[in-house]
Length: 146
Image (tube, rainbow, N blue to C red; front, side, top):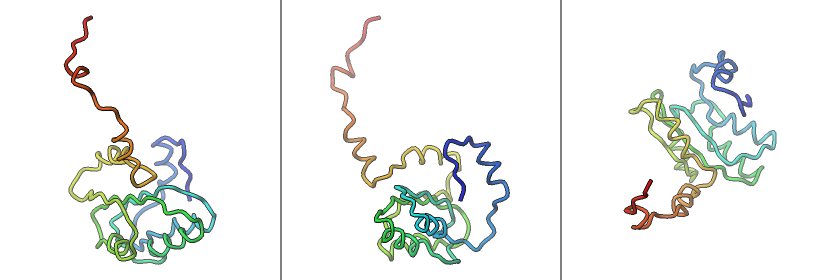
């Protein structure tokens, strides 16, 4: 587990330089660790091809986390090119809602824009939009003298 809170991108790259993808994906291992440590989180960002092939599976870890911690974090899944996506299907079969972004046909430069839309509760983005005051006709068409 790496705590990257407050770290710059360069610091994070240095911390993760020896970590590489090589198969044996366990999408649930991080969440399992959080449950073991009793850590409360409000959101999960998964950047993966979804090719779960090593336990614990994400759905098992998520259900265990919910039971132990009493919280259902919002899940964001950024799907990359790679192995067959079992994660989405497993979550759907287990009634775990995930917000999925298909990154297989887009560039990775759009990720920061998508991350900016991440919220810790399912409807907080909608609430934020609905609470934004609309411009009136006068606001739009009134010219301001300089």
